[in-house]
Image 1 (cartoon, rainbow, N blue to C red):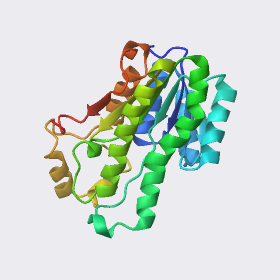
Image 2 (cartoon, rainbow, N blue to C red):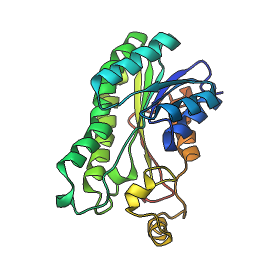
Image 3 (cartoon, rainbow, N blue to C red):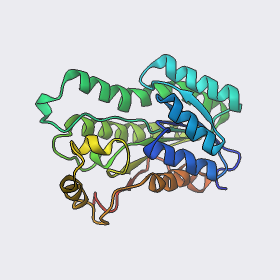
Length: 246
């Protein structure tokens, strides 16, 4: 129960890593707001964990402001924000990725972190505490070919995490990140281009531990970094990658 009496908002929490994080937070005692574009799936996860569901497009300011206002209204305050929602473009030579795909990747993976920070940081400052966790990727540390602009967006998230941590530390706000390797999530097929035994074997050959990361792996790491046990940790970008980045 390391998150007993904590309140948390997790974006992209209806499936994959986000659902794993939301479920672990609830198991550790937190009250959780499950945010996703998929209303039905968000409601299903929220129902399972005794949380609250909210529908939002985290690349839009009005949706971000609305989800945080609703969470604070319902829960009284927020202690933890997890920026987990993310997308990728399909594998392609960098010069062939469309401008539309580029804009969408940076809106969801990067602009959302800016928008949530603008809304939540004043709330955290008023309380003198708070934890922000950004779910980046090993792609921002050790890029894979043909995912160029996705890689760049995750590198942006890592740098944003570190600079936010430095600026917000005096206000009692910690900011950390997780860098998962490809995992058993809805995005896996998009990373690979096609989900075949051969493609999976190629991906797995780059991971020393020989398996993909799981929602449970991310939930365990997130619960630690957002708990009081990690009160001295800020600006940490933790690889959850089975040795991929070594």
